[in-house]
Amino acid sequence: SQKIEQNSEALNIQEGKTATLTCNYTNYSPAYLQWYRQDPGRGPVFLLLIRENEKEKRKERLKVTFDTTLKQSLFHITASQPADSATYLCALDRGSTLGRLYFGRGTQLTVWP
Amino acid sequence: KAGVTQTPRYLIKTRGQQVTLSCSPISGHRSVSWYQQTPGQGLQFLFEYFSETQRNKGNFPGRFSGRQFSNSRSEMNVSTLELGDSALYLCASSLEPTGGVSNQPQHFGDGTRLSIL
Image (tube, rainbow over the protein chains, first blue to last red):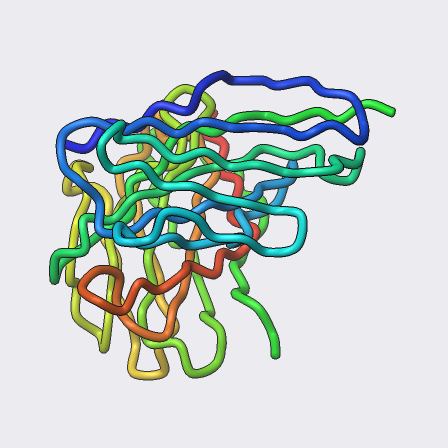
């Protein structure tokens, strides 16, 4: 089955810096990859989706890259703010007809002033 | 547009009991997926329903079941509850089913926190 590893359980950075979160996967090659944000006591909220034939996707201060050779996705938050503090989850889908999302365990990001 | 609604938000049960959780998807969404989230295992896929049919099922015992109604609302049931079933149960909806070329993002509710005593 699909195995997904997110670089660390927790990441602490100073406000204004760029946060970089890593998602590594093994076994199957996903057709696309999604990133979600989850706040305590809430459900995950969709942020970005990137397809296997795309190298990079941007949305405001967020950037996602997808390297199918390295089997890795990087999620960047530039000019980070304390409000960006949350757990970030990556999720993969192989793209088959009966697809399903495999989620990583998430990285808890804390941005301190 | 109202988001995904899950009821109840919190539930306390004892071992051996059964429980039913409810999920109302975003209006117009026909696919509903259920996940179990625990600190140790993260988000684990339970099953997905589309047009009242179960399309896909995760690696959970038969005690976990679900169904979807004609209005796309969904319920999941857990019978003979065990201590290990304590978790946050999340429901997510999307316009089309997961997989294929649709690449649908999931819209999650805030979950039902189930505690087993």
